[in-house]
Structures are given as structure tokens and as C-alpha cells.
Amino acid sequence: MTPRSLAGELVRAALRAADGTAAVHAALQREGQELRVAGQRYDLGAARRVIVVGAGKAAAAMAVGVEELLGDRLDDGLVIAKAGLVGRRPGRIALAEAGHPLPDLAGVQATKRVLDLTAELCADDLVIVLLSGGGTSLLACPAEGVTLEDLDELGDLLLAAGAPIADLNVVRKHLSGITGGQLAARAAPARLLSLVLSDVVGDPLEVIASGPTVADPSTFADALAVLERHHLTGQVPAALLASLRAGVAGERPETPKPGDPRLARSNVQHVIIGSNALAARAAQRRAVELGLSATVLTTGLEGEARLVGRALAAQLRELALHDRPLRRPACLIAGGETTVTLQGGCQGVGGRNQELALSAALDLQGLRDVLLVALATDGNDGPTDGAGAMADGATVERARLAGLDPEARLDAHDAYPLFLALGDLLRTGPTETNVNDLAFLIAL
Image: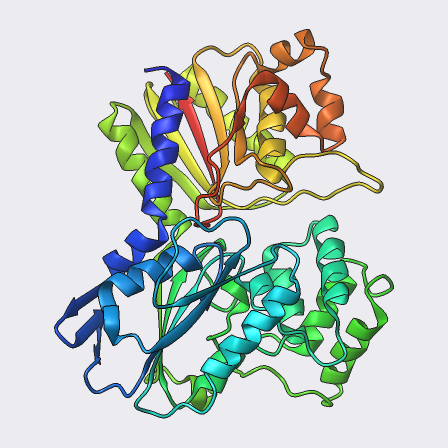
């Protein structure tokens, strides 16, 4: 097989492992009226009502899995998914489609319905919450005095500043009426089962979808500190800044904190049913089946995309030239999520994975039988229709022969047109999942 055909096999294996419907079936078992999840048992026959709510890029696929298991035992439900990316649709559980990465009015209206469904419940009710990447934007419930336009501007500023997802979520959940543990607090005293498909490095529950069912250790002061750290206090909308400062002054209630009885472990269970690590290991197993030596280097990959690209290129050179750390044919796998810090006035088109691949290409020049693949598992790398890109030892030469300057494109954050012209964009289409990014380093 060629490096590119091998890469296709690994991408498909990783995405199968991250599938929302399959992940639900792997995590939940039902026998009669008993539902078993990660050592906990739920008596469906004793539950007064069973309600499903959730949000994220995988919400619809996850809801299909729950429906297939629980059938007519479901009493009500609503999940919110990214508009235009839904393939599989649940039948009994209502589906709303809303804006992402920028929240919109459809998201606000759907979130109000989620809040209505989880109001005035009793201890005999069971709420199943389905969360996946993108949930923060889709669960749109702006704090009083804050508009959607304010939140859109905040997101643009933080992303342009290269802020990691954890920083974004610290701020956003202090401007929300549902994230940061507030959904679980609202549903109490009902039992709550939260099924999570993680899109955050390290799988911190308080960060994934901004933790609507998890006690929030961060504070209003922490949210202000994020803005200060990224030098944004003078740029964010005045109403937004005023809202955070009101929280610091005690004029707005804090999000539920660790130790809050409404979120006690006896009443709220969290289960991570899919993650970057699970997808990476699935790709590793497939590589071994195809005759390659393979290992997962890390699932904690973070940092500036162009710097990470150079580091991964160095790993691939070591593999290709010196059979380290594995003997060829081999594949090294890395997972995580990088960032791109845009320079002022940048008009380039691309995504973090495309930028990573272009940076790596500069250091892979002249190598034979190697391939670096950078993949966004949701199928959407930046504001493009690509899921990432592929780079090998001939990428730079081919680009220059086509009249494209790789260094200039990298500096302009304009990788998409280059990879489009070379035919080296990854295009998976919408995957209905999101477990961060994966990089495959192949040397034959």
C-alpha cells in the first residue's frame, strides 16, 4: 500500500471509533428495565419520566443510539446539533439545529426548550444528557444584558488571540445561564446521567461543552483574568465586561461550585464514552493490522500549529532516516488540538491542521516514502470545507512548480488554496463527531 492509501485506512478507523451512535452502544447496556452504565444501574421501571437533552456536533448521532436502546421508554427529549451537519436523525427525541461556532437565535430558542424540559423535576425522574464538542455555542443562553453579538465578538477576539479552548470556556460559562454546572443544578433533584464525547485535551469534564452538568471550579475573577492575559479588556464589548465585573462584585450568582449538593456524585454520573485517545488507539490497531509498527506518541498535543508542525516533521524525519523510535514501515500517531494566532489584518484561508501540515512540509523536503496527515475529526478544519491536509517530501517542490510560495502562504495563514491546488486537502465531509485532532506520521 502507498502512504496515502494507508492514511485513508487510519482516518476511517479513527472516525469509526469516535462515532456517536456506536459510542453510546458501547457504553450502555440494557436488560429489561435495567440500564447499566460504567458500574451504575438505573431502574427504568421505577423512573417516573426519562428525558434526554443535549448539545454538540455528535448530539444527533448520540441521540439515535439512546433511542435504539431505550425505545418507547423515552418520555421526552431535545438535542441541539450544528446546522447543516446532521446526517442521522432521532425519531422520538426532538432535534434542533443551530449556529456554530457562533451562537444564534435558533440556539437561544432551543436552549430555552432544554431549560423548560429540565425544570420542576422530581427525584424519581431520570435525565440523560448528551454532550459533545460544539456544545458551548449550541447551548446559547446569554447572561442578562449580554447579547449574541457580544458573544460573537468575544469568540472572535479570543480565537484571534490564540486563546486555548479552556480559556474561552472559562469566560463563556460566566456569561451563560446553562453551562458551568447550571443545567445539572436546574435538573436537581432528578438523577442525571451525562454521556460525554470529549473534544478537549485531557478530557476535563468542566471544559467539555463548558461543563453544563459539572461543578465549576473557575470564577468570575478567573474569567476577567483570561481577558487580561490576552490583552482584551479594552476590546471586548462594554456590556460583557460589565457583566463579569458585576459577578466579581457579588451582584451576579456564581456558577455551582465543587461540593454543591445538587451536583453530588450520588445523584450525577458522568461517563466519557468517546475521546481522542480512543480514536488514536483505534488507528494504531488498524496500522498494526496493515503491517506497520505503530505507537501513539501523545494525545496531549497543544501549541501553535506551525511550531507543532515542525516538531512532528522532526519526528517523521527521525523515523524515516534512523528507524527511531520504531523500525519502518511504521506510523506514529499524535492527538490533541493546536491553535493559530492570527496576525493583524490577516485575510488568509485555512485551519489549524492545514497550517500544521504546511509548516511540516517545509521540513520534510526531499524525504521519500513519508506522509504527514493532519485531521480535524469533525471534518471541519477552520472556516473551510477541508478536514485537514496531507504533506510529504515533495509538497514544497510541487507547490513552487505551481507558482505557489509555501513560506508566504504559511506567514499569511493561507494554507487552504495551496493544498486545494495540489489536491492534498482532506475532505471527509461532516463526520457527526468531534474528538479533537489527529496527526499520522507514516514512513515506509
